[in-house]
Image 1: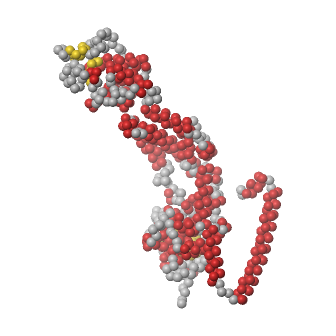
Image 2: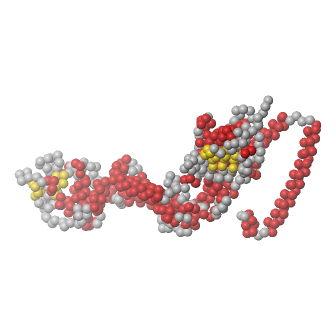
Image 3: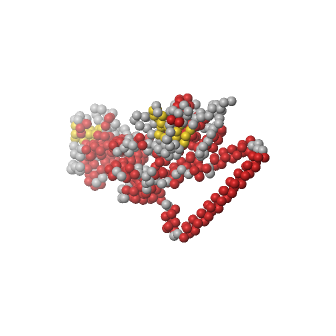
Length: 187
Length: 393
């Protein structure tokens, strides 16, 4: 990353940038507040606990019941990590391609305010919608190539879904890998 | 503008109406003029002074003094006073003609375009236009004659009262001076040297918001932004004057001509400003680099890091020390303690592991404390400048 000199900024801009930097730092420290402010999603206490506890852990395993909101919370963590940190490479890996697509679609619905996920959240914000890198060919920023879905952000972060067996998708460098539906518990 | 005054002696002080010959004798010039062609010789008036001086239509009496005498009276006063407004005002008083500020302004505008016409002739046309014969108006306000301030042109007056007062009261604060200093530092000269405090306060504060890397590297765009800021300042002043010309309904009605012309000027400036913004991709709507997502959270984040803002760096130490993190860690530990049912072997293992961990961590602390001490010693040996260099990287 090429560094630039602060001398090109006015004192007022420097003060503004410092204040904004503090806000960013605060949001990184408090993902639950970031979730409410940036996404407009108010989580349940249990979800808040999981989000905060998983935020800075190198590895976390969630063992939750059906319909506990794992995918939803996973989608939130992925979005927040992508937006609040630079140059993140986030991969969604699942044994079957459709499962990773499912989570990616959930992210897309939250960001674009579409579908069932978005319609169930009254307070949903459209801030992240403005953050995706758009192109004439891809107006929303969410591309759906057969090999894998992808969305990029202006800070260099990207979210990929691996549409196939993770074993066949090697040699990718990631900062965060989310693996939904990995463990199947047989009673 | 001044005209030759007629020197006709006459002892009569009231107009003489001759019913038999259908003539009216002007008391000033003494000439008996045909009342059949009244409109071309005399002005109409509703003043009680002239009741009965129209035999054909008594409801619209003539003034009794011929037009030429009225004009020459104006010329006399103009030659003495050299002030068109005062000359018109005194002539109006003399012949009991109302003085109307709006009509006067209108007449003055017409005079500018048609300098060959007699000013009082134009004024009378305005006063008597649309059947609005004089003295059906409210008459004149003597304060125009005696009050120097209100006697001035309304726009000038409004400007002087508002702007001068503001300029006098407005001082550049420390913040403003810093902004001014920044502008001069960034563009290497003072673009608003010589402007009043009233203007400077607005201009520098407005300009500083536009100054960024892109603008500073584009000399033409910078000149356009300076023009745009100047335009906005002019618009602001026009708004100020319009506001003072329309501060109540009565003033608004009497100044509608001026307000209209100011609004037209404002529209022209706004048009020019829009054009500048559009052609130079200055506003967000017309911005050329839309796809770069300028001003979005994520692009700002990237920019802050490029500009070396310490706070924008990822700081996991800070994040782990956050109150929220401590809160969830406490909840987690509490629930673990509540659920634990350990036997003797487990407890022995835990104790052993804890002792090992304790030893490791104590060694680490001693190492870090020693490293810290050595760094303090090294810093103590450096001069203040060298320490500053180390701290600033």
